[in-house]
Image (tube, rainbow, N blue to C red; front, side, top):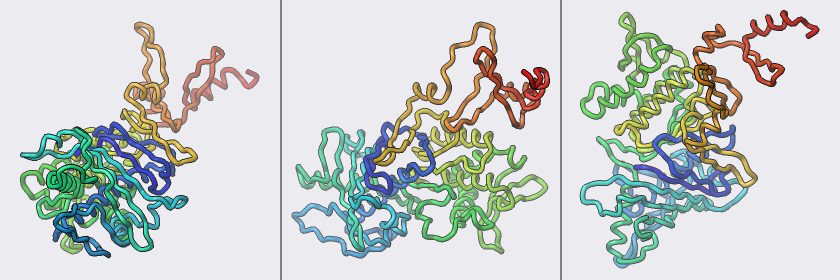
Length: 458
């Protein structure tokens, strides 16, 4: 499944329509704190939660593996009536999934939440030809006193504009197409496990649906959540696809050897604690993840989420948290590889404040306005001008290493310049303006020497 476009209106501070268009495999959202980046990702998750409720209603109820809290019985359609195009769920249903109705509807406007997605669905054998093209689905959520009504207002194929939600045309064919699309949009059952289509990895590295399960696992001594540790432990000893996922997880962690030293990552079952834990086998000892720094802990949990969650689309809040600049670059490379891996999630969406992820064009910039945030897509051609000052090519034979300036004013200096300045591990620098208006970058010591040479009177 591939999300090509997504639009939302009415979710939290997203009062005016906000649209992400032309989405690729790896998409980066930049913007100031509290502008609405996380809200935008959350609204995508709400779209799939609403679709799941509609799918259950069309079926007449959930399967045994897809239970939920229902406050109203499913409507019974007469033989000559269309399958239901709406579902009613109590507040508790959405709260359990991390979307409490008291918080997700816009506080200044009592209007509905409208979510629209253009998706390219997975194809299976004998599927109709129109599934080769994207489907447009729009859902609307209206808040009542104790329940939320979910309506599917549009379910349209792009080949000819036929709208299955409207019920036009041949009843049997339309209803069959309606049910088929809802099935493909809903969660799947894989090896006796319910797998979501979308997952949001929050800043504390929990999933959105974990919000009601208590404290963040990173607030405890064991950073790896129990269920995630068990999944990794089972995958390590399995064969086929699960084992390959574990190998991808270990390969991703291997990029951060400079943070933990040499060794082999593996799982160990702690019988006393009755849980699986991740350890680094150095050859002479087993070093548990829980005894390592918070940075490598978050890297390990994030990589595990990306590889083991099983969702088609995964969103991640600020993957660079607690990481030094070089570790952020390594994580960016890991995400690039996962986005290109056909066995990994088909799509990644990321919020970030890091200049490392500004280098990933195209990216989306969120800015504030009176009506809420607005999105500006920066193309690959524009990204160079946006992220790196335009400069003429150096004369033939001249050497001019090019650095990088982030939107936050952080300067990345080429390694050879760092070595020349004697600042391979970082340090203070001073920018001095010459008489011709050009700037030179000096170390603190070089600046002090320059001041001594010129004297206070100069």
